Image 1 (cartoon, rainbow, N blue to C red):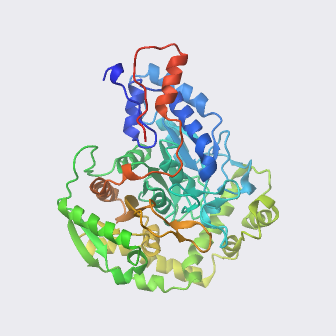
Image 2: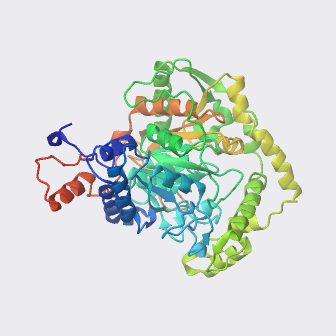
Image 3: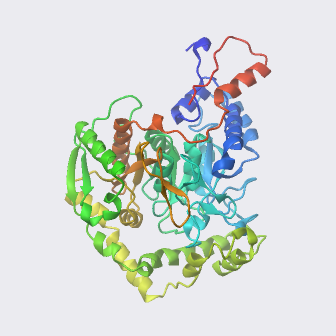
Length: 530
């Protein structure tokens, strides 16, 4: 492409491959990218509270990456690409790592999270930390998802006062606004895929262990995994493959241009009666899901309806105490272990007991308006509790559900039209992959629905929703292939528009830099307008 034909992508709708190509060809620099993202954050994030802090060293790192690119024949796969991290992913730099809590301000362990090491090795720039549900949603029963003491209340991007989802709230909202090239979150049970749905972006929780999760501030060391939140399915898979310490994923049908061919792929749809939580949904969701299923079939997939989900009813009918005791116990163990690893601990938080006391005494934590009931429930647990031991055994059975359903029905994946806590829980117990992919949005005549507990907007015209795709452990390629097909056949991405957008875009920043540098060559550097 000649300079006179050069176009710079808009950061609202772009892909990692576009950004990497533009950097490689010298159309823009990593410094240009970082400057643009920082200005976009400054312009709009006061409306959304998606970013807790930006990295004060990001521009210096970008200069270093640009220098490396100039002298290298073969660049590292993420060289100079700015990425945001959820605030429970630990970095040893100028930024904090606090899981949204004031208690961990200034606290540092001896090592960074393993995923940060992988990012740095690949050449990524850590742009900043994103807001989250404090302690990954394990603090309170009276707060709203997406709130933390450090970051305040994070909001969804498609209408004023929109309710987001947690716990990786800020990572998802930031991606919808084009505030980074990609973002990382963490998930035990739907903390990546559900926020991604509310923000109209792709959320992918890969098989546990595919991405290194050591060193994050765990809510559950047993079930947590790092996940990715991106603009496209292709970006999600590329990022996972780059950061994975394992071999690349299996046979992928994904390309950037070809229409999906799902011949030989078998897709199961669970029996409605067994998962009413995800089928008794808004009519717009039902209509979009029906259209999706028809189009997947037209791509060659075999659709298997009325798939029975063993143990779904049994799990749904368990008392809350039974459902929560394993996670609560693991929360206590995980938090205490992390606190014991701190080499710098200015607030002297050495145990979950200390954390609860600090949270109650710190005005910014807004106690008692926002209680600490979940932290206290975790602190009351014991590894010797008979109920805990009983539920550990039941968890072993829950962990077999998704693999057994896929095997007995000869399926590659299960798909559902809305969030199912039951299926998400089974996937968490198994460590199996889940992806959410936007498929449509509420139409213009949709009646606005307000969430009673938070007073925030839950349903409104323009808010997107997603399909959820479940696969077997270590068969992430099946989830990726079906996710890519869903993305292509529904084509919703370009229609999604946040209600307040940044004014600054990459083309303007590049043009100013070239003008300041005295470069006059007639190049059209106008950004593609969102």
